[in-house]
View (cartoon, rainbow, N blue to C red):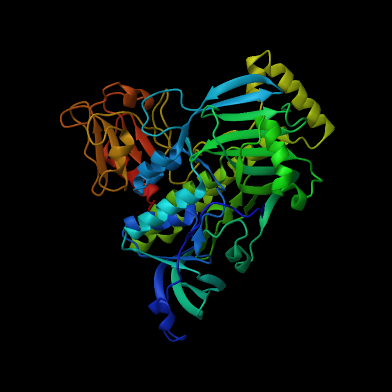
Length: 539
C-alpha cells in the first residue's frame, strides 16, 4: 500500500538492550512464547496470554506506532474482547460510536440499516478509532503487566524449526542475538517475513481496481453514520465511502480506475479537488493519504510446526466490511486460551489444531463475503456491471432488491463447525448454538451485563445456567454463572432468557473465548463433563 507522509504525531519508543543479548551464542535464552509483531493482534494476544499467567516476549522491528490511521472500525465482538483485556472502556471513550449506515445511488438514498437495533448490550455495534490510538492504549496496558517483555527494533531475520522449540535470530541496532521459544506466533502483517521463512504462500485473488483513502481533518455536521455511495454525483461512475473518526477527522474512500497511476493519484494536490467536489468546499487538511488494491488471500495452513500465524500474516481481505483487524483480534482470542492450556500441560498439543480448523473457516467466510462485496462494487465484466445496475434499480422499489445491494457486508462473529463443539441433544427454538459466540444482555449484579459476569474472576470455561431451584453445580475448575433462583443474577428485562431461548433448568457451557461449547435442556453432570472434555481437546 503506497502511503503519503502522515502529519499525525507519532508515538516513538526507544530501543533497549536486553540481557538475552549478552548470552553466549551456544546457549541462547529460552522462552515459552515469542510473539512477532506489535500491531493490534500481536499486542492483544500478548496481553491475553500474560493475563493467563504466561510470560511473553513481544518483538517488533519498528520503534513507533502511528503510521496513518489504517484500521478504524472495531466491532462489538472486538470491544468485548478488549473489555477482557482491560482496555475496552478506553477504546469506547475515545472512539466514535455508530450503528447506522446509509446506502446511496447517485443523489438518492436507497436504504438505511441499523446493526444493533435492540437495546440491552454493553457495547455498541462498532466504534471508529484510528489504529494508532488502539495500539497506544494496548501498549499502555502492557506497561501495567509483568509478564510481557516488549522489545522494539528487534527484527527476526532467521528461523529454525526444532522438535521441541523454534530458534530465532534477531537483528538489533547493536547486532544480532539468538533465542529459543516453545512457540512463535507470527503477527507480522500482510508482508510477513516469517511466512516466507517457513516457505508458505498466500492463495487467493488480487483485484485490479484501486481505491484512494484520505483521512481529512475538518469540522463537519455529517451524522455519525457509515455512508456509502454508488455512482455519486461528485465521483461519477465509481463508489465512495465516508466515516467519522475522533478529533474531527473523517475517513474518505474513493474508487479509482484500474489504470490510475498511484504515484500521481496520492499527491495531495491531486487528491484535494476530488475531496472538494465531494464536500462542496476546500476547508480541510490531510492527515493520511494512501492507495490500495483489494486482496482476498490466505495461507493454506495457519500452523507450521511450532510457528502459528494470526491476523494479516495468515489472511487478507478488502477493508470494506471491517473484516481485517476484527478477524485478526478473533484469531488472538481463539488462540490464546488454547496455547495457554497446552503450555500448562492441561490439554494436549493437538488442541492447537482446532485453532487452524476454526479460524481458517472464519477466513474463508470473510474472504467469500469480501470478494462478493468487491465484485459488486467493482464489477469485473459487462455482465456483472449489468447485474449491478439491475439490482440498484430494483432496490429503489423492492425490499428484496435492497437485500441484494452489497456495499460491504460488515463483520460479525463467525460460527464454527468445530471438533470442540458438542451437538444439541434436544430441540431449541433459538439462542446461540454450539460453535456460536455468546450473546450479551443486561443483568442485576456484577457490573450490569452478562459479558461483565463472564469476564469477572478470569475467563476459563463457564457454565451459564438458568436456575429452577435445583441448578446443577459446575464441574471443578469451571466458573458458574446462574441466572435466577436463590443467589443467582437477576434477569430484569427477561433478555438473557429470551436471547438464550432458556427454560427453567437450561444451561450453556461457554469456552474461555466466549463461544458456546455445548447447551443442555436438562443438564447432567455426566453430559456437562463429556462436553467439557471434548472442548478441552481431551476427548
